[in-house]
Length: 176
Image (tube, rainbow, N blue to C red; front, side):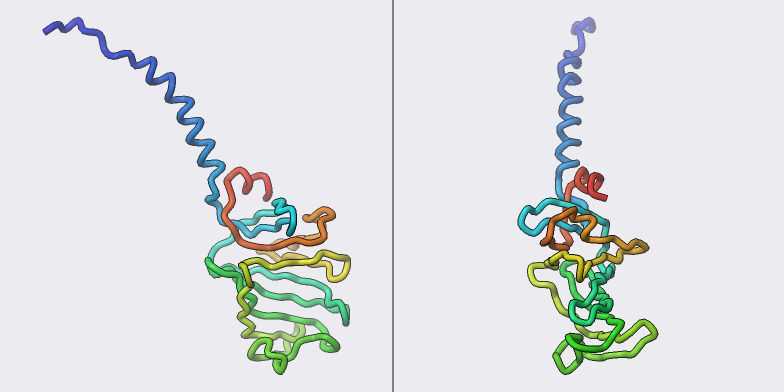
């Protein structure tokens, strides 16, 4: 046996390793793997906001009631599979406000913050919430310790949808 035999050419293999790693990283960064609460244009589907969300997490939508012009705050839960409206809090009782007899919720409580309807448990159809953005009702997302004006985020888009979806790492970074 000849011990002077040269090892196989490893330079050619390493030439392809770096581009292969770059391609793999690019594919991973574009794959939809990050679960986010998103705000998108209804017709354009343009992503305007993407926030981390965990199964069992609650967030709230606050808006001004169009008839009596008082605040209404709906609490929504992401179960990991569905968006479900759990409660509704309104600060003033009057025309256009829901009552238990309407079939909305199971209990109504008078609290220091207003009238709270519990037991709503309404599953959002198609797993998104369509929202028409106007000066009234002026929707705000109450997310963790933040209050986010949806009109500001939508930048002139009048009809949006709030949903939970998987997006890419790149989209998650760009749309914080």
